[in-house]
Length: 456
Ligand SMILES: Cc1cc2nc3c(=O)[nH]c(=O)nc-3n(C[C@H](O)[C@H](O)[C@H](O)COP(=O)(O)OP(=O)(O)OC[C@H]3O[C@@H](n4cnc5c(N)ncnc54)[C@H](O)[C@@H]3O)c2cc1C
Image (tube, rainbow, N blue to C red):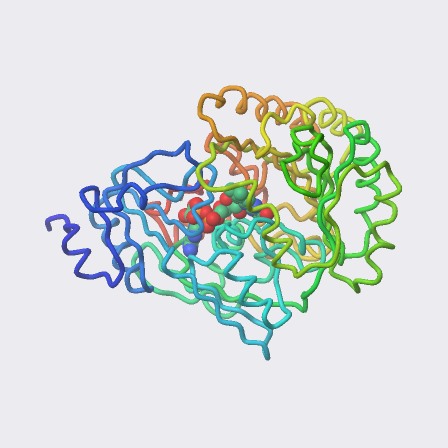
């Protein structure tokens, strides 16, 4: 049988199929991390599940690489490939809310901005990431850590079902009642098992929150991290938030003469009664003088988009990540040594809390194995100028090497770099063997390998 042609694929698809000679090819092949410069054979801008089925079958039958792109945020650039097919879900971003059932169904290319805008109209939300341009599917399939994690679990803990196109081109609904093995695996196993054309989530009443960033001088780092360690262990679960090393951007709430200086910031999000918020934040306020702050009541989607301006598309990215059970004095020392050297205004280090509701789910109930860790750390190198690559990558690597001995094995796959493939197995711990088994069942030839790969 001869290999299928791009012309045949075009005839099968309702959405655009953009090949190298077509207008808009360079724009269509670009992903969020500008360090990634790949030239696919074609980008299929799917309009519906049928297009996805056609593109999956095309790549399989042609024997070429297949990349799947939702929000396009993958730091290792998994949303594109050289010479193969990219399924780009940018045209599938609809979100439908069922306010009675308190659920929302998002198409496979929706971003958290799309999702939050739709659910906020009903005073509802679920756990998503902290930047609104990140894709719902990619973030959820790897875990999903954000402001609501302590109270509502990971994004994947709120997943009710997903429509998935598998490697054989079938369209399956995965849930607790249908294809349960697939449903178990996609909740943590990343994009290894198929293309989600829609995801259905449980929602929760979250409307106005109280929060935002506070900036403290660097001499408060030790006190702040030690306070955070104690406070977050049993803080009310309506509290989400994280410390961050941050160079002050030129924003009006920061004194102009301090723009460009490095601070330890704390970003908080309180979803409980607004009149209780300041009481909860008081110990943080009492820690040290606050140089600048932008804290107050705001709609949840506003906080979710508050830092989008710091991470526009087109930056260079290199990240490392660790899970941490205990924020020990030794790891705090490592943060004290490396955090203040953050080299670019876009770069940062965050320590997200993942206790509370995350710990109430058994570690084998989903593929996400790190239910005992209390923190997920990300050292996120992001900078505009490729000439600065060496210096920025060095900062991330040195910082990561200093914290690794005091961290758990493995790391959050959504924050891991392209040179982290050898940590994937450790990331899944005891869930690894079952993941390989499900991979063999649904993708025995590893068609979906542009990801932190679980080889069959
Ligand atoms: C600026 C920024 C902020 C971030 N903030 C957070 C955060 O707050 N919390 C957090 O947990 N993570 C965060 N992340 C990490 C994020 O979760 C991962 O980068 C995630 O993989 C991005 O998903 P995406 O759909 O945007 O990316 P893509 O590059 O489109 O995809 C990433 C991976 O997911 C797969 N995938 C995407 N869509 C689908 C689909 N529909 N079906 C099947 N597989 C799919 C892809 O094949 C690929 O392997 C952030 C990343 C960035 C760059």
